[in-house]
Amino acid sequence: KSVLFPQNISTLISKLPPRSKVTSQEIIINHTAFPYFTAFLSGERSNEIYRSMEDSNSINIESMTGIAGSKVKLYNRLRYCPICFSEDMEKYGESYWRRIHQMPGVLYFQKHRVLIKESNVVISDSKNDYLCADEDTCNPEIVEDFYPKIYKELNLKYVNNVEKLLLGKHQKKELKFIIDFYIDKLRERRYTSERGYLYIDKLIDGFLQHYPKEYLELMQSEVDKNQMGNWLRIFVRYNSSNRSPLRHLLFLQFLQVEVEELFNEKKVIGRISAKEMRSPIFDKEKRRKEWLRIIESNPGANRSELKEIGKHIHTWIYTHDREWYHKVTPRNNSRKKKVDIIDWAKRDEECLALARKGYERV
Image (cartoon, rainbow, N blue to C red; front, top):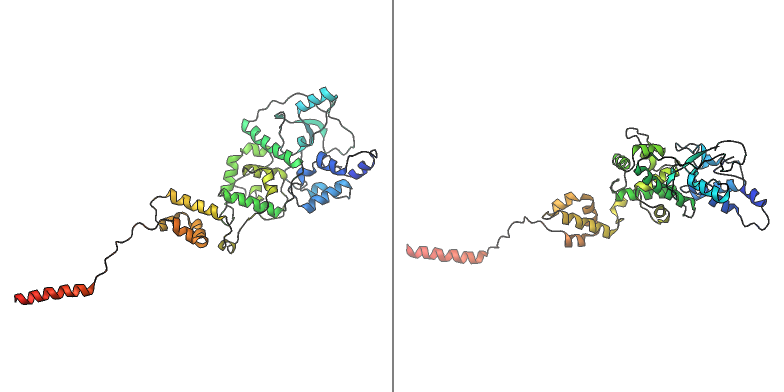
């Protein structure tokens, strides 16, 4: 049995009154952890998990989603927002478990901006008891927040992205597409070469400047620079290993990219082979602007000097946009003065006249 991934949902639907409009899809998409944990999985894998929740077929869903072998673990107890709990008790006489509070890494609830609390309900209990969110399992006391302000700001952005995943309205992307997307964004931020090969040490330094070490520990995603096998070193590699949705969201937040941008993207480049580099892959206008920036930043530089300053861009512009290159690039300033061409016939006549004058004097 699983709290986050209930099964035999179609059986439950069949037991509802005939006129009930509740469907398996509504329950799975709107009331379980399915959209969050399958957001970055392939369509094929997601469909298999969906079918297993609809009609139990003995598939271990936590293994299918990658939870079982992940370093990012689920919380041991059901969790709740104390303000939500107080409001529900006043309005309904009891509260209910909200799925967003159970997602890994959710430290705060965005609506009330307070820390999430643990109830006394153990999530791994194998019993089938119904345990309501009431005074026996929860209490309304707000936990005092000792975390630095930056932790709250970072986490509320993360929680906002979790909510977007739970909507379950995004287009499925294969893992290779996602990695190519990451490489494109890293290339824009100078964390890779033009061909998309990672400057891994620079990436790790940038990541650790963005996220405090202690915050990453809270998010079960600490990064040890000296550990060759740390998760960030292999996160943007081409391999089939499962990656936690939490770490996908951390990485997108580091790149300052909205979740929608990834799932709405239609075309990516990713890593480029040496052969592909010879063809005009990159946007011409973008390259032109970069070359003009180099020219403007180095007034008085000749072509050889500009070439040395912007090697990769110079090569691309000169190869694929040569006419424009010659039009905008200043020529060398240190040219030799043009020497006048000698009119030898005229010089001969002048010399002959001088010779005659000299002969007449003798």
